[in-house]
Length: 270
DNA sequence: GCTGTATGCAGAT
DNA sequence: TCTGCCTACAGCG
Image 1: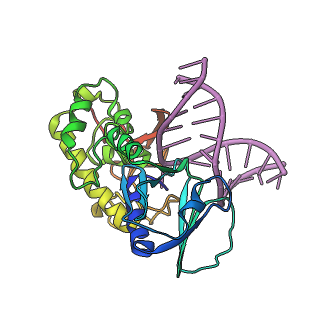
Image 2: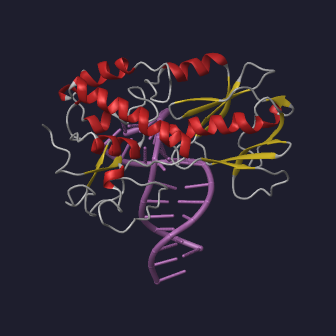
């Protein structure tokens, strides 16, 4: 379930479980050929930027770079000798913990200059305390592309994916088709502040919840819903269902090669 | 068993 | 703008 908050959460979990510990490393599926070279190395401080995860080791200057892509996932188990099931690209094991990685689009051991290059092409990350949102604003302000497209661009803002783009635009009542150049500075600032809040919550809880208390089903006199992506949301994958605020049907259209969801009535271009 | 789908992105066209 | 790729699982016959 990889938007940026998941990678930051994973970095924390890796640090809490195998940080500072000598681990065994393998690639049961065989595609991460550098894995065996990491045997008996000590895990350094794992960190994330945008949707990229980096795992350093104390004895070497290279780091493992992981990008989960669409369906990559880590599984952490508080046990050893866990049977290998499915296609495990990378297994890291410490006494008491097993971490399996499946389905990543990238899992590679890379040198410092390659790490720098990846970080350099990423826009500010709402989960980075030192992020400079002004850089994102400058790029958005210069673009005629729809804001819903720009929010998916990792070199503009890193870490935002298809759920957060739809939800933050709904929460800020912004028309997803509004060109970046037509977005007001105050609306941009509201979007950024909301991303900081939503993604910090996502990192803490491991799920995306965006519905404000006053719009919760109980508060609105409705039956609670059971969404299948692990969180409570306003519009993501709720096409044709009634908007939680105005009850008009949620709309759905492919934008920037991904399914966009929005409420035409709530998100006006004023 | 097969098909479609998914919170992503690079590289080709 | 399109295609390919990484994997698991639901839904269907």
